[in-house]
Length: 75
Image 1 (cartoon, one colour):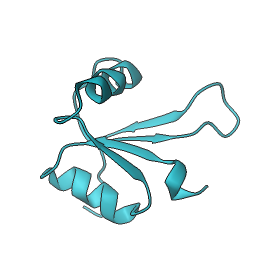
Image 2 (cartoon, one colour):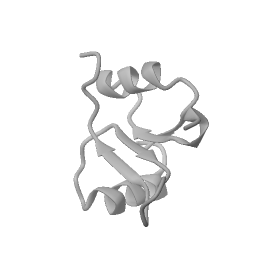
Image 3 (cartoon, helix red, strand yellow):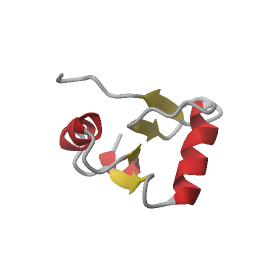
Image 4 (cartoon, one colour):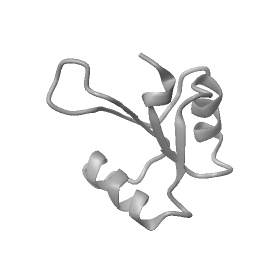
């Protein structure tokens, strides 16, 4: 899957967001502190969980995207 199809919701300055962006440099990034609509969408996708980053990958075979809350790989 191309990283350009991955969306990362996060916050500038967050070390977990930074690690996710370093691992997926071609992913699209949205800073939820700067975009209230993006924050609302992130909260919808996470069921109200306010932890970043949130990594959204397009559905491969299922009905909706894959949503990963938090990022600890490479920690």
